[in-house]
Image (cartoon, rainbow, N blue to C red; front, top):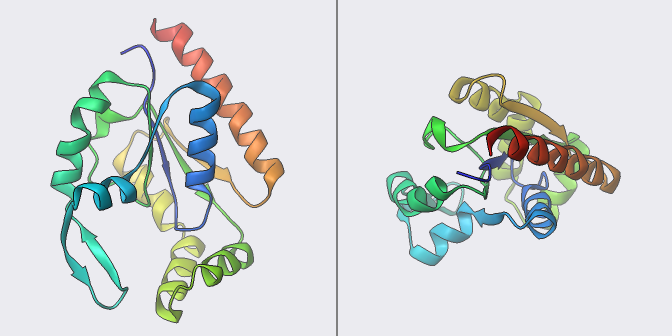
Length: 171
């Protein structure tokens, strides 16, 4: 594997897609949004009425991504991480955001009150960071602020430096 695999995770609206796509355009890594992958391949296992969204078939997602992940050089964008094989990722970034910024972003997306409240609570209690720490070696799981454009640029710079160092150390 000549290039690292990277996971971006966090509650909806924290900026995973923006960061992932921009990093892919600057580095040549392959960007994969799990939600888009699931929609394209109909990788679902039912529908969640309360949240008005399909239920992801995690086993089919893993199977669909497996060969791509073995090759390396993949940026994966998804809310959680507990179903991905631990060895897939060389680094995991949990994007975090101020609750007032998140609320505005999710409200603009038309989230129901319940869905909005649950996602805000998830962010407040750092549920996804805890999931990352439980799923991966603490040395590869990191938090990144994602409130304003300046933080996006700073995050991109830091990650690109990390990628350069990873390539030097592993090739």
